[in-house]
Image 1 (cartoon, rainbow, N blue to C red):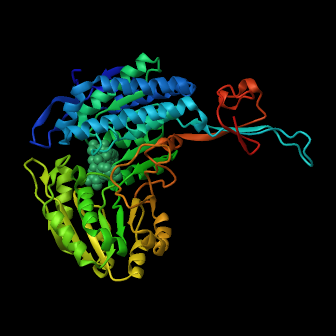
Image 2 (cartoon, rainbow, N blue to C red; image 1 turned 180 degrees about the vertical axis):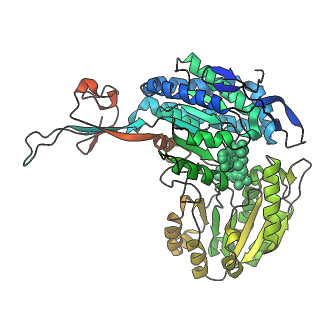
Image 3 (cartoon, rainbow, N blue to C red; image 1 turned 90 degrees about the horizontal axis):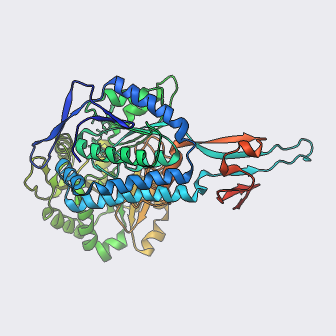
Length: 520
Ligand code: NAP
């Protein structure tokens, strides 16, 4: 498929803007054709107008119809073949294996939501049947179900050009919920965005979805993104990226005459606690696996373990030094991300010691991994050391006692994940650590590493602020769908006016809570 650089607005494409931008290959610094036309405010208005009209049709589509649409999107993404993989690699500097894996994750995610829609029980249908003879007052018939919110604005992250981008988790969950999507493309992967945007457009046409159910707008500044969040047609926002970006959009949404929810998944340091007995029995392997997790994908994961906390152990620090010194970095996604990494590293050097430094390979935005060390006292006195540095680095904090380790855990802000490594005896002795961590993060892991997030029904990829702007939700897995719905209650409705999910004879055969009992 030939790239055009034109904005996708429903079933049409436009390039009314006069300013054009280009993607850059981070491996060699070369610009990549074609020119992409920055969307104009008029184009945003058109996308919003079409999306609002589309919502009146799309919100009434059955689970089966929406599932067909999502499955067709997955198929059209696969039909893009090598062109998508080649463009992904050129724009991100990420290797082929990662590109293929991420494509599989993206199509798998779409198909998982399709399965959820076909099953249908996700809508949380509740029925309290009428009690006409109840004294002193009769109870009316009360029924409720999750209904779609409206048009959703979505922003993708640079570090997942497929799985957290145009057809990623936010788009998939919004479309599954019954909400049209207007997507602001990330300037770091413009071509990948257009290819996937075209696949969605084709799938929408092929499955008879309404014109405007999906639009894709290009921009490399904040004008279109901010206007999207402020647009009266938009009823919710999904975002993955930096704290700065997520918080700015959250504030803009809160300041609207009609405030709307912003589900922003932002930075996280993902602390890893290694307990004393496992350090003794398995320290060398843990050190190796830890450095592997820190350097995976050049550390460009929101689940990258940016901090390790332990009680003093010299052998473990020596093993870390050895593995850090033999590690290799890689090409970062953009010059901006590389510059932020280098700045963060230089600043951290002023407050810490270096345990080990790896090598940087050839490449325009290539960087080296680095592992830092600090004492619990210095860590406590320099709270900025617990801020995220996006890239292949981590800070090891050595405490003297269990109480100091617990105090460090207590001082943590919100994160996406926390990990505890321990023997069964360690875990029993440090049960109070788990109690603290449960109040700090969205996912706690035992004896694993946080990088690698399963897309499944029980997954939670979220956490208290500042990891996200709404800790009650997840941006990965099928639970993400309810971010874009709201419960609506129908009182004393005749059966003919009810949606199928609530009708008396349960035509969709879904699980429903009837008078407090879960039934089909
Ligand atoms: P980003 O800079 O926050 O950008 C994400 C998207 O939001 C882009 O489309 C960006 O548009 C837009 N945006 C950012 N600030 C905005 C604002 N004030 N107003 C309107 N739109 C705005 O994230 P990124 O480029 O993916 O990565 C940069 C940093 O984010 C990294 O260094 C890292 O710290 C963090 N990060 C976190 C995660 C995570 O999963 N939590 C993932 C990736 C990155 P423009 O680019 O056009 O400005």
